[in-house]
Image 1 (tube, rainbow, N blue to C red):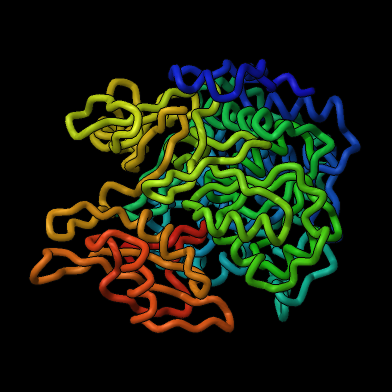
Image 2: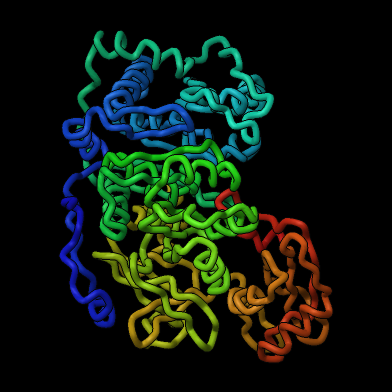
Length: 557
């Protein structure tokens, strides 16, 4: 068993006392951990990209070749390197290369358009950018021609690199684009990796746990994205948490459902794989029918994804008995899970989705449902528990006066542990506001029950004040999800002349299902207090979401 596993104590009693088991973190950085993987499992397959397999040794050599190429262009410790691509092997290669140089990786949402990309590159001061060729052509090159970005070193790759099967639903009509003048071609670097690495060794870099590993930009759901400074210690600790929580070894097969530019995918897929040497199955971008095909072919044992991805899998209508029988752990983070969705997934697959809670600022997980355990549902709110604190982590629930409240009382969740960021990039004031007595203020409202389980109620800024009554959208959503016709629902407050605000539901229906606004209002009225149920219902084919599956209530409003 892995050295990261902590000594298991009675799994819940420890949390009722605000304590958690100590987690042994054997390395300061993922770079150190991967060096150990190279010694132990050199020939093992670490990346599987459709019909293309990459061994541990190949990944190491390719990353070193890219690192040397970037080093020759002046990229050194502390410099920022943007990663602007989907879940391709190039992402892992570029991430490892960046860290081997002691540089700071800046994962960028590949859905970002020109203004969004320009903001991140300017704010981070990224000196290099590794990106998909199509994104370079459509987004980067025009910005470069207009002098809108400060970046000087560019490396492009193709989504077609490293595989030949090219599932048409993902790659129909796609071709490998010619490399632009003055831009490095990652495939060419890979093809010449042996020569490049034989010519010179990597620069010697002293890398410590408190060095910054990532500038992870927040999703911007409440304003301009901020760059969370996640250290190597943050990344290493939470990779060990995922390993310990799910009992992951090098024999596991990790299915990358979550996008790796997002902190969930970054830690639960990329960092965990580099730590353990397990096989990581990549699929460019999530597409449910392709995901099912890969599950049947490669029989993964673990995955982590947003609940919207699991709902998409269920909505295909294509899940067959035994499809998910290889899994030993299924986890979800990034968006709340309703009890109804979890029950339906279990009915279809035989797999229980283990809830997890974290933020970009906490480098992913802070609380979770231990694998093999079932989360309770709070009877008063119908909320599914987000779990208990992971090892070495303390969680408080703070009242309006900033003081900790007792079990059952609602307040703002505040977390303290080795996963907390050191602050926001170039934003000292925002950093000060984010912490109180060493605890990170999450902006999420929740409570702890008498047994030590935590529940998420909502974002502080999303609370609806209906005639003086507090209405938490999440609570209303969980009830509405029990209606058999509802696929997705977002609850928002809208102005009301009498109540100040009133409750509105924006709904998308399941394929083939039907329901009227009047029917859904009546359903809510029957199942909720009079001040909570939606008085207005609007239908949409698709609710607006971030690329990580969070429904954007701000856009809904």
